[in-house]
Length: 257
Image (cartoon, rainbow, N blue to C red):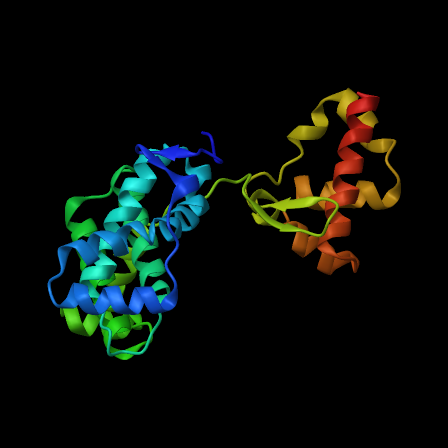
């Protein structure tokens, strides 16, 4: 995917207009009075907002054109539902709407199949959340959503969890300017606790050549299935240091093997 693409869906993004706050207010008043030309101007003047939002989803493997079209649907929904009397900036209201529309699109095309009934409950719950936010300017709790839909808290929680986007084990979660920590570094492995790894003589020799600290980290991480954070707490150093020492140990082992 070309992230810095100039033309998306036939739109030259480098020439998109930018509206001032005053222009937005004036156009929005006209829109609420039924002015279709003002509506078109307002949409065109906020396409840059759509572009800024969909950039967050470029790593999902979807085509930029598709994300842009879906984001525009979210923008239009935000325009149609925006209340000019609430006293909130349009962008503040529109961004969650655009994100929600893109996420719904990604869920519908998710390779993990979720039953239609569970999806229906989840989408109803999300709709209640949006309405609640619009009405009370705060996010609804699971209990409030369950009460509104006359369902149990467990049913709502299970449905919302079922449609969550899968996270790659290689997705970065922290970077201190040196080594990046990934999701897999924070996942515990309770199954891989036997000593099958050391049955290979070459591997045993490689481990034996590590210094005591590196050897300890390798044992805790790969034989006891502990996360980097758990290792850091046990030996009294930072998670970033554990990450660096772990990578050094693996590199030493590779060279020795």
